[in-house]
Length: 172
Image (cartoon, rainbow, N blue to C red; front, side):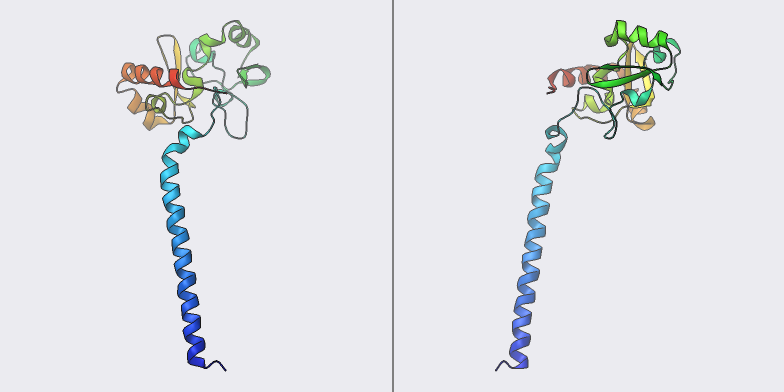
C-alpha cells in the first residue's frame, strides 16, 4: 500500500521532471529561434517585384508613371492594368499604361519596389508608395517617413550600396 507521504514524493518527482522537461524544451526552442532568425530575411524566397502578402499588385496599386509626370503618388485604376515580371501594375490613364508598356524599366521602382534604405543594408522591406523620390530619372520607394529621412541624409551613398546589394540578389 502506498502511503500519503510516498504518493506526495512521487508526485513531486513527476512534477519536477515535467517542469524540467518543459524548461529544457523552451530553452532549445529559443536557442534555435535565435540561431535561425538572423538568417530568415535571406532564407525566405522573395519575388523580384514587391507585392503585399495578400495581393499581386505592384507599387501598392499606384501609377508609377505619375511619379515622373505628375510628381506625386496617384492611385491606379483597375481599368488600366498590365502584368510585368509576375506582378500586376495599375495606372490612372490609358496614356500612362501605354508609356509603361513601351518601357517598363524606365518607370518601375528600383529594387523591385522594395525599400531603398533596407536594400542598402542587404535586407528586404516593403516599399511604401507614399514615401518616394525620383533621383536621376529613377524611382525609389522607402519603408516610411522616418526611413526616408534617414535615406535622404546620403542618397548617393545609399543608392550605391543598394545597387551593389541588389545585383547579388537572385530570384527563382
